[in-house]
Length: 341
Image (cartoon, rainbow, N blue to C red; front, side, top):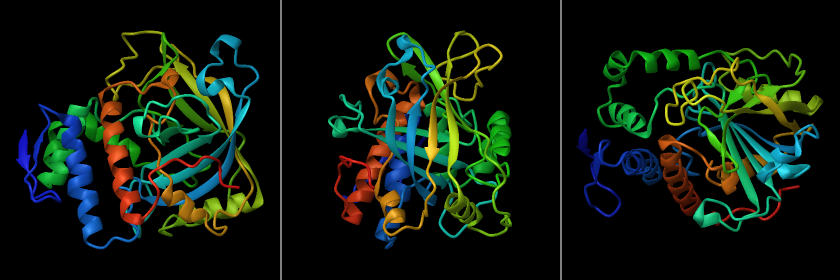
């Protein structure tokens, strides 16, 4: 699969080749073909190429369960608790409706010592988790993701691709599920991560005794943000952070992201509670703070290394997207040292 995009910012033609280098090709399509042209067209501020519609930036605390056994208290889980800032978003554009969009959650933890995997931020004192409101991804590998993106971004023809990839079409249909609140959705990492030297896990985030929130019609294009704002003004929200350990190689592959790890073989275990504090998400500066932060699953400790070819591609695409966005918006290309109060 090969195509030429119009021109990069240096005036050179650039090739997209999913067979040879899917990671570089994904970077070209998401950053050079989508994000950079939007910046040139005057988008201000320049936004993320994906999950750009923010529903709320939330001050939180990540509390590790006292029930986690000593031999599992490694990396991030060696701490009793950490300050956090949580960004809720949808993979859609500003101005479009929230209904049946894919919801993402980025969790940035503060006060995490140790060298980070992302070379540009290796000395930072932060670490990130990224999840979305589904438990599997819609393609298996980076090559598959490249071919899917090529079909839409270059050929402008997702329909033909989906006709030939029925399982991807089924998963995408399942991802278009109605959610009444970002606080009541269940989130999954979709992709696996190392847990120390010998184990692998997937992450899961589940609401804990979260009651019904304000009734806001889903035809309100910003109902997820409005619901979250009204809910958090009245009460805090607690969500359980679970780890599902890989216990069977055959049914729990590491580079087949469409495969659901069966919970009847390995039940997720509660490792922490994410507490979203009572607050006004429209407090001065809070929305902008969320726009200026960047989240990358590789911004973490070696104990929690992202696994698989899609994760490898994410490292490059997310870092390049953050660099472009921060550069164009005049934001320092560094992680914050402490959490915003």
